[in-house]
Length: 125
Image 1 (cartoon, rainbow, N blue to C red):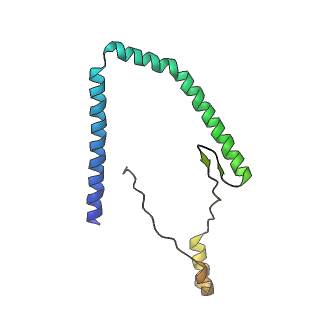
Image 2 (cartoon, rainbow, N blue to C red):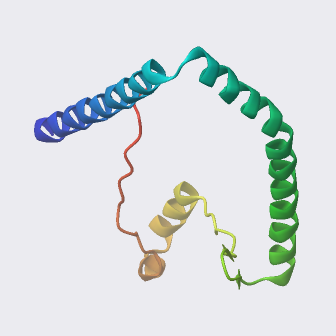
Image 3 (spheres, rainbow, N blue to C red):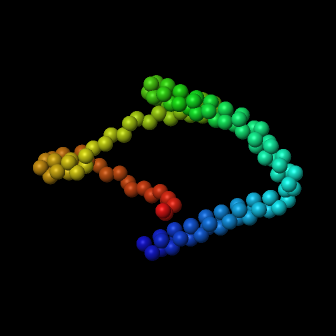
């Protein structure tokens, strides 16, 4: 376990280095930008913001429509660029209750399967 913790700490250090490098790069870019260019960039951002917002709204609306239609269709649909993947609903069971039932009815033990564990790496809080 200690080796894994050390590797997680190493991963954290590498990600911190990556963040610092990104900040340094942005600082270098900011150093070569004149006040005039910075003002022009701000004006471009302000000018194009409504267009970006309008497109984002249309994208969100269209994604909702696609999801609703694919759910009604009941299977995945593939376009030229995007693929709407339909996934059947997960089945949930009360494992605690079923284990109690299994204790009284061991003949059903063959019906229970346990999948392989998996790992996802998340940022610690």
